[in-house]
Length: 381
Image (tube, rainbow, N blue to C red; front, side):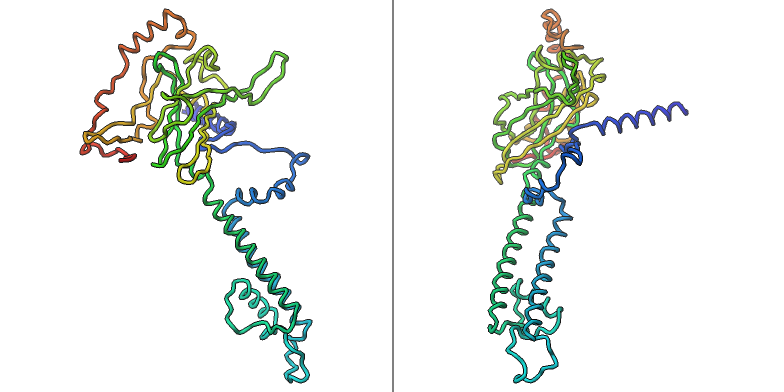
Protein backbone atom coordinates (compact mmCIF):
# COMPACT_ATOMS: atom_id res chain seq x y z
CA UNK A 1 0.00 0.00 0.00
CA UNK A 2 2.76 2.41 0.97
CA UNK A 3 4.70 1.51 -2.15
CA UNK A 4 1.66 2.28 -4.30
CA UNK A 5 1.19 5.68 -2.62
CA UNK A 6 4.89 6.49 -2.99
CA UNK A 7 4.75 5.53 -6.66
CA UNK A 8 1.73 7.78 -7.21
CA UNK A 9 3.49 10.70 -5.50
CA UNK A 10 6.60 10.09 -7.60
CA UNK A 11 4.56 10.05 -10.82
CA UNK A 12 2.80 13.25 -9.77
CA UNK A 13 6.12 15.00 -9.09
CA UNK A 14 7.53 13.81 -12.41
CA UNK A 15 4.41 15.08 -14.19
CA UNK A 16 4.74 18.49 -12.52
CA UNK A 17 8.40 18.63 -13.51
CA UNK A 18 7.53 17.82 -17.13
CA UNK A 19 4.84 20.52 -17.15
CA UNK A 20 7.31 23.09 -15.80
CA UNK A 21 9.91 22.25 -18.45
CA UNK A 22 7.44 22.71 -21.32
CA UNK A 23 8.45 25.76 -23.38
CA UNK A 24 5.06 26.32 -25.03
CA UNK A 25 1.91 25.43 -23.13
CA UNK A 26 -1.03 23.69 -24.74
CA UNK A 27 -2.86 27.01 -25.10
CA UNK A 28 0.12 28.71 -26.76
CA UNK A 29 1.76 30.66 -23.94
CA UNK A 30 5.55 30.68 -23.78
CA UNK A 31 7.16 29.58 -20.52
CA UNK A 32 10.27 31.75 -20.63
CA UNK A 33 11.82 34.56 -18.60
CA UNK A 34 14.10 37.13 -20.18
CA UNK A 35 17.38 38.45 -18.94
CA UNK A 36 18.91 39.54 -15.65
CA UNK A 37 19.35 42.91 -14.02
CA UNK A 38 22.39 43.52 -16.20
CA UNK A 39 20.52 43.25 -19.49
CA UNK A 40 16.92 43.87 -18.52
CA UNK A 41 15.78 47.50 -18.67
CA UNK A 42 12.31 48.85 -18.02
CA UNK A 43 13.09 51.92 -20.13
CA UNK A 44 12.92 49.76 -23.27
CA UNK A 45 9.27 49.02 -22.49
CA UNK A 46 8.56 52.69 -21.78
CA UNK A 47 9.94 53.70 -25.17
CA UNK A 48 7.49 51.31 -26.79
CA UNK A 49 4.72 52.49 -24.45
CA UNK A 50 1.81 51.75 -26.81
CA UNK A 51 2.66 48.05 -27.09
CA UNK A 52 3.25 47.95 -23.33
CA UNK A 53 -0.18 49.41 -22.61
CA UNK A 54 -1.90 47.10 -25.09
CA UNK A 55 -0.29 43.99 -23.57
CA UNK A 56 -0.90 44.79 -19.89
CA UNK A 57 -3.76 43.14 -18.04
CA UNK A 58 -7.28 44.53 -18.00
CA UNK A 59 -7.11 45.34 -14.29
CA UNK A 60 -4.18 47.69 -14.94
CA UNK A 61 -6.03 49.24 -17.88
CA UNK A 62 -9.02 50.01 -15.65
CA UNK A 63 -6.74 51.55 -13.02
CA UNK A 64 -4.96 53.57 -15.73
CA UNK A 65 -8.32 54.71 -17.11
CA UNK A 66 -9.52 55.97 -13.73
CA UNK A 67 -6.15 57.49 -12.80
CA UNK A 68 -5.75 59.34 -16.10
CA UNK A 69 -9.07 61.16 -15.89
CA UNK A 70 -9.13 61.69 -12.13
CA UNK A 71 -5.52 62.86 -12.12
CA UNK A 72 -6.07 65.34 -14.94
CA UNK A 73 -9.16 66.75 -13.22
CA UNK A 74 -7.24 67.20 -9.96
CA UNK A 75 -4.16 68.76 -11.58
CA UNK A 76 -6.20 71.28 -13.54
CA UNK A 77 -8.31 71.87 -10.44
CA UNK A 78 -5.13 72.95 -8.65
CA UNK A 79 -4.31 75.30 -11.53
CA UNK A 80 -7.80 76.83 -11.45
CA UNK A 81 -7.53 77.19 -7.69
CA UNK A 82 -4.14 78.93 -7.95
CA UNK A 83 -5.48 81.36 -10.58
CA UNK A 84 -8.51 82.21 -8.47
CA UNK A 85 -6.37 82.64 -5.36
CA UNK A 86 -3.83 84.86 -7.11
CA UNK A 87 -6.65 87.08 -8.37
CA UNK A 88 -8.26 87.32 -4.94
CA UNK A 89 -11.43 85.45 -5.87
CA UNK A 90 -11.18 83.33 -2.73
CA UNK A 91 -11.34 86.31 -0.36
CA UNK A 92 -14.92 85.87 0.83
CA UNK A 93 -14.63 88.71 3.40
CA UNK A 94 -14.53 91.36 0.71
CA UNK A 95 -18.18 91.58 -0.27
CA UNK A 96 -18.17 95.12 -1.55
CA UNK A 97 -17.81 95.40 -5.32
CA UNK A 98 -15.85 98.64 -4.89
CA UNK A 99 -13.12 97.05 -2.78
CA UNK A 100 -12.84 93.82 -4.79
CA UNK A 101 -11.23 93.28 -8.16
CA UNK A 102 -12.98 91.80 -11.17
CA UNK A 103 -13.31 88.04 -10.71
CA UNK A 104 -11.69 85.58 -13.14
CA UNK A 105 -13.98 82.67 -12.24
CA UNK A 106 -17.39 82.87 -10.68
CA UNK A 107 -18.35 80.75 -7.65
CA UNK A 108 -14.92 79.26 -6.89
CA UNK A 109 -14.18 79.69 -3.21
CA UNK A 110 -12.33 76.47 -2.27
CA UNK A 111 -10.25 73.62 -3.67
CA UNK A 112 -13.36 71.45 -3.87
CA UNK A 113 -15.22 73.94 -6.06
CA UNK A 114 -12.09 74.32 -8.20
CA UNK A 115 -11.97 70.53 -8.69
CA UNK A 116 -15.66 70.50 -9.63
CA UNK A 117 -15.11 73.30 -12.13
CA UNK A 118 -12.18 71.35 -13.66
CA UNK A 119 -14.35 68.24 -13.98
CA UNK A 120 -17.23 70.20 -15.54
CA UNK A 121 -14.86 71.89 -17.99
CA UNK A 122 -13.09 68.76 -19.21
CA UNK A 123 -16.28 66.70 -19.50
CA UNK A 124 -18.21 69.66 -21.01
CA UNK A 125 -21.01 69.27 -18.45
CA UNK A 126 -21.54 72.99 -17.91
CA UNK A 127 -24.02 73.19 -15.03
CA UNK A 128 -23.84 76.98 -15.15
CA UNK A 129 -23.02 77.62 -11.48
CA UNK A 130 -19.31 78.19 -12.16
CA UNK A 131 -18.05 79.99 -15.26
CA UNK A 132 -15.27 82.17 -16.60
CA UNK A 133 -15.80 85.91 -16.66
CA UNK A 134 -13.48 86.50 -19.62
CA UNK A 135 -11.56 89.27 -17.86
CA UNK A 136 -8.38 87.21 -17.27
CA UNK A 137 -6.28 86.04 -20.26
CA UNK A 138 -4.67 83.30 -18.14
CA UNK A 139 -7.98 81.54 -17.56
CA UNK A 140 -8.73 81.54 -21.30
CA UNK A 141 -5.35 79.95 -22.05
CA UNK A 142 -5.83 77.36 -19.29
CA UNK A 143 -9.29 76.52 -20.63
CA UNK A 144 -7.84 75.82 -24.10
CA UNK A 145 -5.04 73.68 -22.67
CA UNK A 146 -7.41 71.58 -20.55
CA UNK A 147 -9.79 71.06 -23.46
CA UNK A 148 -6.93 69.81 -25.66
CA UNK A 149 -5.52 67.56 -22.94
CA UNK A 150 -8.96 66.10 -22.25
CA UNK A 151 -9.40 65.30 -25.95
CA UNK A 152 -5.97 63.61 -26.08
CA UNK A 153 -6.75 61.48 -23.02
CA UNK A 154 -10.14 60.48 -24.45
CA UNK A 155 -8.60 59.45 -27.77
CA UNK A 156 -5.78 57.52 -26.13
CA UNK A 157 -7.98 55.58 -23.71
CA UNK A 158 -10.63 54.79 -26.34
CA UNK A 159 -7.93 53.59 -28.76
CA UNK A 160 -6.32 51.48 -26.03
CA UNK A 161 -9.57 49.76 -25.09
CA UNK A 162 -10.51 49.12 -28.72
CA UNK A 163 -7.03 47.77 -29.45
CA UNK A 164 -7.21 45.33 -26.53
CA UNK A 165 -10.69 44.17 -27.49
CA UNK A 166 -9.69 43.55 -31.11
CA UNK A 167 -6.39 41.77 -30.40
CA UNK A 168 -5.92 38.98 -32.97
CA UNK A 169 -4.93 36.53 -30.23
CA UNK A 170 -8.59 36.55 -29.16
CA UNK A 171 -9.38 35.05 -32.56
CA UNK A 172 -6.79 32.36 -31.89
CA UNK A 173 -8.86 31.18 -28.91
CA UNK A 174 -11.41 29.75 -31.37
CA UNK A 175 -8.80 27.59 -33.12
CA UNK A 176 -7.94 24.40 -31.28
CA UNK A 177 -5.50 21.54 -31.73
CA UNK A 178 -5.98 17.92 -30.74
CA UNK A 179 -4.78 16.97 -27.29
CA UNK A 180 -2.50 14.27 -28.68
CA UNK A 181 -0.66 13.48 -31.89
CA UNK A 182 -0.61 10.06 -33.54
CA UNK A 183 1.79 8.11 -35.75
CA UNK A 184 0.31 5.74 -38.32
CA UNK A 185 0.24 4.97 -42.04
CA UNK A 186 -1.25 7.45 -44.50
CA UNK A 187 -1.21 7.01 -48.28
CA UNK A 188 1.65 4.53 -48.16
CA UNK A 189 3.80 6.65 -45.82
CA UNK A 190 4.49 6.57 -42.11
CA UNK A 191 3.21 9.92 -40.84
CA UNK A 192 2.87 11.97 -37.69
CA UNK A 193 -0.67 13.35 -37.59
CA UNK A 194 -2.15 16.30 -35.72
CA UNK A 195 -5.71 17.56 -35.93
CA UNK A 196 -6.76 21.24 -35.88
CA UNK A 197 -10.24 22.76 -35.92
CA UNK A 198 -11.69 26.22 -36.54
CA UNK A 199 -14.64 26.74 -34.19
CA UNK A 200 -16.01 29.72 -36.12
CA UNK A 201 -17.75 29.77 -39.47
CA UNK A 202 -15.52 32.64 -40.65
CA UNK A 203 -12.34 31.43 -42.32
CA UNK A 204 -8.67 32.07 -41.69
CA UNK A 205 -7.36 33.35 -45.02
CA UNK A 206 -3.91 32.35 -46.23
CA UNK A 207 -3.40 29.79 -43.47
CA UNK A 208 0.07 28.31 -43.19
CA UNK A 209 1.12 25.54 -40.83
CA UNK A 210 4.62 24.50 -39.75
CA UNK A 211 6.41 23.00 -36.78
CA UNK A 212 9.61 23.19 -34.76
CA UNK A 213 11.21 20.30 -32.91
CA UNK A 214 12.97 21.61 -29.79
CA UNK A 215 15.57 19.45 -28.12
CA UNK A 216 18.98 19.61 -26.50
CA UNK A 217 21.76 18.53 -28.85
CA UNK A 218 25.53 18.17 -28.61
CA UNK A 219 27.59 19.23 -31.62
CA UNK A 220 30.65 17.46 -32.98
CA UNK A 221 32.79 20.04 -31.18
CA UNK A 222 31.22 19.12 -27.84
CA UNK A 223 29.05 22.23 -27.56
CA UNK A 224 25.68 21.74 -25.89
CA UNK A 225 22.83 23.58 -27.62
CA UNK A 226 19.72 23.99 -25.49
CA UNK A 227 16.45 24.28 -27.40
CA UNK A 228 17.99 23.44 -30.73
CA UNK A 229 15.31 23.99 -33.39
CA UNK A 230 14.64 21.62 -36.27
CA UNK A 231 12.06 22.43 -38.95
CA UNK A 232 9.10 20.07 -39.20
CA UNK A 233 7.03 20.31 -42.38
CA UNK A 234 3.30 19.62 -42.18
CA UNK A 235 0.86 19.26 -45.04
CA UNK A 236 -2.70 18.30 -45.81
CA UNK A 237 -4.17 16.70 -48.90
CA UNK A 238 -3.92 19.98 -50.84
CA UNK A 239 -0.51 21.11 -49.60
CA UNK A 240 0.67 23.19 -46.66
CA UNK A 241 -0.19 26.78 -47.71
CA UNK A 242 -3.55 28.56 -48.20
CA UNK A 243 -5.55 25.93 -46.35
CA UNK A 244 -9.32 25.81 -46.87
CA UNK A 245 -10.00 25.93 -43.15
CA UNK A 246 -13.76 25.46 -43.17
CA UNK A 247 -13.77 22.16 -41.25
CA UNK A 248 -11.32 20.28 -38.99
CA UNK A 249 -8.13 19.35 -40.82
CA UNK A 250 -5.59 16.62 -40.19
CA UNK A 251 -1.97 17.73 -40.55
CA UNK A 252 0.58 15.19 -41.77
CA UNK A 253 4.32 15.03 -41.34
CA UNK A 254 5.88 12.30 -43.45
CA UNK A 255 8.48 10.37 -41.45
CA UNK A 256 11.10 9.74 -44.13
CA UNK A 257 14.84 9.33 -43.80
CA UNK A 258 15.33 13.09 -43.41
CA UNK A 259 12.78 13.39 -40.61
CA UNK A 260 14.05 13.70 -37.02
CA UNK A 261 11.50 11.01 -36.08
CA UNK A 262 13.11 8.44 -38.40
CA UNK A 263 15.41 7.12 -35.64
CA UNK A 264 12.59 6.63 -33.17
CA UNK A 265 10.49 3.54 -32.50
CA UNK A 266 7.40 2.70 -30.55
CA UNK A 267 9.43 1.49 -27.54
CA UNK A 268 11.91 4.40 -27.56
CA UNK A 269 9.54 7.31 -28.24
CA UNK A 270 8.63 7.84 -24.59
CA UNK A 271 12.31 7.89 -23.65
CA UNK A 272 13.05 10.85 -25.93
CA UNK A 273 13.51 14.38 -24.63
CA UNK A 274 12.00 16.82 -27.10
CA UNK A 275 9.08 19.19 -27.59
CA UNK A 276 7.18 19.51 -30.85
CA UNK A 277 5.78 23.03 -31.29
CA UNK A 278 3.16 23.49 -34.01
CA UNK A 279 2.25 26.90 -35.46
CA UNK A 280 -0.70 27.96 -37.59
CA UNK A 281 -0.60 31.46 -39.11
CA UNK A 282 -3.54 33.07 -40.84
CA UNK A 283 -5.55 36.24 -41.41
CA UNK A 284 -8.99 36.60 -39.85
CA UNK A 285 -11.63 37.03 -42.54
CA UNK A 286 -13.81 39.40 -40.52
CA UNK A 287 -11.08 41.75 -39.18
CA UNK A 288 -8.19 41.27 -41.67
CA UNK A 289 -5.83 40.90 -38.71
CA UNK A 290 -3.04 38.34 -38.71
CA UNK A 291 -3.02 35.82 -35.89
CA UNK A 292 -0.95 32.85 -34.85
CA UNK A 293 -2.07 29.75 -32.97
CA UNK A 294 0.50 27.64 -31.11
CA UNK A 295 0.56 24.41 -29.20
CA UNK A 296 3.12 21.80 -28.25
CA UNK A 297 3.42 18.05 -27.84
CA UNK A 298 5.75 16.11 -25.56
CA UNK A 299 6.73 12.47 -26.24
CA UNK A 300 4.10 11.24 -23.78
CA UNK A 301 1.44 13.05 -25.85
CA UNK A 302 2.29 11.21 -29.10
CA UNK A 303 0.57 7.86 -29.67
CA UNK A 304 2.35 5.38 -31.92
CA UNK A 305 0.03 3.03 -33.79
CA UNK A 306 -3.15 5.06 -33.47
CA UNK A 307 -5.35 7.00 -35.89
CA UNK A 308 -7.92 9.75 -35.33
CA UNK A 309 -11.60 8.92 -35.47
CA UNK A 310 -13.53 10.58 -38.32
CA UNK A 311 -15.38 13.78 -37.45
CA UNK A 312 -16.96 14.83 -40.76
CA UNK A 313 -20.11 13.18 -42.05
CA UNK A 314 -22.93 13.95 -44.46
CA UNK A 315 -26.62 13.74 -43.66
CA UNK A 316 -29.31 12.28 -45.88
CA UNK A 317 -30.30 15.84 -46.74
CA UNK A 318 -26.86 16.55 -48.17
CA UNK A 319 -25.59 18.72 -45.31
CA UNK A 320 -22.11 18.31 -43.86
CA UNK A 321 -21.85 17.80 -40.12
CA UNK A 322 -18.88 17.99 -37.75
CA UNK A 323 -18.81 15.79 -34.65
CA UNK A 324 -16.36 17.52 -32.33
CA UNK A 325 -16.82 14.84 -29.67
CA UNK A 326 -14.45 12.65 -31.75
CA UNK A 327 -11.97 15.46 -32.34
CA UNK A 328 -9.20 14.09 -30.09
CA UNK A 329 -10.35 10.46 -29.92
CA UNK A 330 -8.11 7.79 -31.44
CA UNK A 331 -8.29 4.13 -32.37
CA UNK A 332 -5.49 1.54 -32.70
CA UNK A 333 -4.42 0.63 -36.23
CA UNK A 334 -1.75 -1.58 -37.77
CA UNK A 335 1.50 0.42 -37.77
CA UNK A 336 5.15 -0.59 -38.25
CA UNK A 337 7.29 -0.81 -35.13
CA UNK A 338 9.76 1.82 -36.32
CA UNK A 339 10.52 3.98 -39.33
CA UNK A 340 13.64 1.98 -40.22
CA UNK A 341 11.61 -1.21 -40.43
CA UNK A 342 9.03 0.47 -42.63
CA UNK A 343 11.60 1.88 -45.06
CA UNK A 344 12.95 -1.58 -45.83
CA UNK A 345 11.40 -2.56 -49.14
CA UNK A 346 10.28 -6.06 -48.17
CA UNK A 347 8.74 -5.02 -44.86
CA UNK A 348 7.16 -1.97 -46.44
CA UNK A 349 5.19 -4.04 -48.95
CA UNK A 350 4.17 -6.51 -46.23
CA UNK A 351 3.00 -3.76 -43.89
CA UNK A 352 1.08 -1.94 -46.60
CA UNK A 353 -0.64 -5.17 -47.64
CA UNK A 354 -1.51 -5.97 -44.03
CA UNK A 355 -2.71 -2.45 -43.35
CA UNK A 356 -4.95 -2.54 -46.40
CA UNK A 357 -6.41 -5.86 -45.28
CA UNK A 358 -6.88 -5.10 -41.59
CA UNK A 359 -7.52 -1.38 -41.69
CA UNK A 360 -10.69 -0.09 -40.05
CA UNK A 361 -13.39 0.77 -42.57
CA UNK A 362 -15.84 3.56 -41.70
CA UNK A 363 -18.32 3.23 -44.52
CA UNK A 364 -21.27 3.63 -42.18
CA UNK A 365 -20.07 7.04 -41.10
CA UNK A 366 -20.82 8.68 -44.47
CA UNK A 367 -24.53 9.03 -43.76
CA UNK A 368 -26.10 9.60 -40.36
CA UNK A 369 -29.65 9.88 -39.14
CA UNK A 370 -30.47 13.26 -37.64
CA UNK A 371 -32.99 11.74 -35.24
CA UNK A 372 -30.38 9.41 -33.79
CA UNK A 373 -27.56 11.97 -33.64
CA UNK A 374 -27.74 13.98 -30.45
CA UNK A 375 -24.05 14.71 -29.82
CA UNK A 376 -23.30 16.17 -33.21
CA UNK A 377 -22.19 19.80 -33.44
CA UNK A 378 -23.36 21.65 -36.52
CA UNK A 379 -20.57 23.50 -38.27
CA UNK A 380 -22.56 25.16 -40.97
CA UNK A 381 -25.37 24.77 -43.42
